[in-house]
Every structure is written in structure tokens, then in C-alpha cells.
Image (cartoon, rainbow, N blue to C red; front, side, top):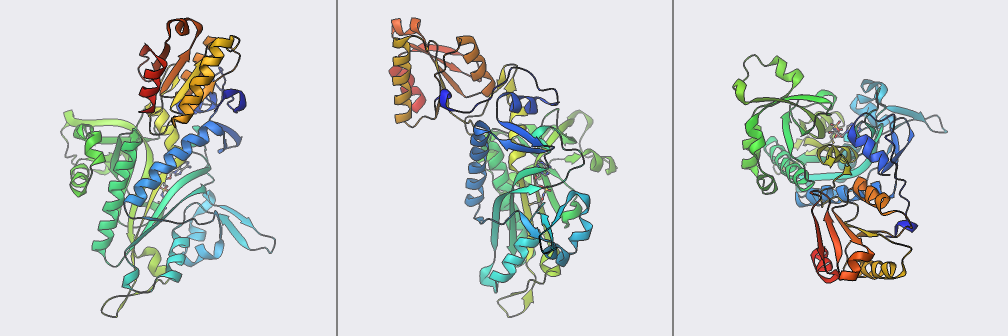
Length: 434
Ligand code: 5CA
């Protein structure tokens, strides 16, 4: 993509209304634009990151055996009256009326809708177990939307729902999602801490939150330092034993920790840090399947209500969490797996015909090799181009300038470390295409 044809409104000024670094950088790097309190438009660069995160979340859901569908954002109030949550949900729910004066709402979550869809489509034990999920916008009329996409009112969530014949099946589905979560966050370059959680309005008795450690997190956590010893490789190859190891280690939110009379962790191993909740999973049994009358015939002919769980990931919130975890003074440092482009190609002298010719040619070769490249072909000072590339945080910068060309070299800079290296065009291509 040529920058002269793109839409990348990068700013040098620090936006006054942003308090935390990820929000500031998302605005400065032209990823999002606020259109109303807690509601954001995704600009082209931000949308690419969102899609990359979504793709990793999707791959891991599919790998765990979950099946994708898509439910609407607008729901009828009657659906929620069936579960009894319509009145219980409170002012966070955005309620509206259609032209026939029917009560509608913008979905804050989808337990009711998926339960009804499953009820219509499943009859017998052969239809279980199933895990269904979608990636869809949600609306919660938060009292204090803040920190940009971190606590928005409209936000993108992956929510999965499991249906099992018995509690043992539910435990297996819960574990499959737990593994998918550990792998998903590791692939996003994040270290997520699973924390045993109270279940709140979703209901049920088994629940975990997944937190990214960051000083700007909204939750205060207490956990066993041994959790920090779990490596990325452990997480990528996670199985039931990894879950046992992790959930065997103490980790609590402050409020819950305060209720624990005898903390099992010795003081020297107890860590206290803040966390960003990027995922939340619940096993709630028959809460919705019973209240909404889902009956499934078992092998022996009896009828049961399926055991259910729900599993959320804050897809749009993850962008904020990733930036909180990965940035420096100059800007964002994207992990390779979610970067909006792999390479930023800089033509240092758009007013120099030879330099432009060489940069154009290199751009063509990168595209040909399938390397996602943002090409700064603007007629601007080199300094401004470097600053733009640094703030948007692409993993590699490839710099073409007249001096290098005389020697037959281009410069390759790694954003994460700042390491620079001169090499021939061919070697640069080989390196980046790999
Ligand atoms: N139905 C369940 C799981 S499918 C559910 O709604 N869980 S939740 O309330 O915990 O939300 C799931 C995830 O969505 C959270 O872990 C968080 O990462 C994200 N999330 C929740 N509220 C917001 C918000 N206001 N802005 C951005 N992300 C949010």
C-alpha cells in the first residue's frame, strides 16, 4: 500500500482526552477515531490489526472444535424475558423500540439467543456436545467508558457457548476453551494470567478471567510468582496438565483475595499487580437451558437440560492490551502476529528520480513476494517519515536513500530493538520474504 493513496491520519500531539499510553498511541497512530462517548470508528490501519487479532482468535476457536456462526446485534426483549434477565440487567443494556412499539435491545451478550437457536436445532444426544461461537459487536452502556477501546460502549467480542450432556462433558468443553485461550494470548505475544473469578450476572459456579499484567489495568490482582515462570512454549503446547498447573497456582482479584483468611502463598512469593481482563469463561450448567426449556433426549430415552458454558474474549480490548504490553517512547511495537503491515518501506528522497525508481522497484518486488508492505512514497522529510514509521510500529523498516544506493545497499531496521543493518536489495528481500 502506497501512503500517498492510504488514509493514515498520524498526529504528533498527544490527545488531551487520553489518559493511558495505549489510548494515546491508538489516536496518534491513526488507528481509531472516537465518534461518540465510548464508540469508535476503526480507521484503515486499526482495522487491519483488529482483523489480524480476529483471525488468530478464530483459528484457535476452530482448532478447539468450536463452530462459527453469526448472530445479530439487535435482539428482541421477549427473548430476555424468557430467561428473566430483561429486568435484571439494568441500565447497562441499551433498550430501544421499533416502529411497532416492540421492545428491542442491542445485545450486551448472547446466552439467550444462542440457547434458543440451539433449542430449535438440536433434539437428541447425537447433537451434543457442541461449541458454537461468533465474533460480533456488543453494546454495554458503561457508566464510565474510558481508556479508548479498553472500556468502550460498543466493542467487539468473541463469545462461544458450549452444550453438553453432563457435567463431565461440560468440564471437557471448559478445558478445551481454556487451552484455546492460553494459545490465543500466547500467539498474540501476551502473557495472560488465569484468575479464579466470581460468576456475577452470567451465573454458575466455575469461572476464570484471563488478565494481561499492566500498570494501567483496571483490576488489582494477587498471585503466586510461580505463574511468571510459565513460558510461551508451555502455553503454545498447553493441555489439561497445563491448566492443572496454572489453576493450581494462587491468583485472585483484590476483592476475592481480601476474603481469603489464610493466603496459601508465602509473602515472598505473593505478587500484587494490576491486570487487564481480556477474557472470561463461565461454566453455568443448566441456568439457561432449564429456564428456556431446552430438552434433549439421552441414549436411554430420558430428557435432560444441556449443561452449558460461555466463553468471551474482548477482541477490540485486546488491541489496547497489546499496546500497553508492547510500546516504547517512540510509539507502538507490534508483535509480528498482529502487525498491520510487516514492512514499512521508506523512500528517503521522493524528489530524486533514481531513488524513487529504486524504491518503486523494491516495493513491486515485496508485493510480488507477498510481503505486506506500507510504502512511504510521500514527498516529505526523512525525519517525518521515520517518526511516522516508529509511531505506527511495523516490525521492519526498509530505508532506501541516495547514499546507500551509490554503495548498492538499503538499510533494514528492526522496530523492536532499533538494530540497523545495511544489506543488498536481494538480501533484504530474502530476509523479509522468509
Ligand atoms: N457472555 C459472557 C462470555 S461469552 C460475557 O459476556 N463475558 S464478559 O462480560 O466477561 O465479557 C467478555 C469479555 O469482553 C471481557 O473479558 C472483556 O475482555 C470484554 N469486555 C467486556 N466489557 C467490555 C467493554 N466495555 N469494552 C471492551 N471490552 C469489554
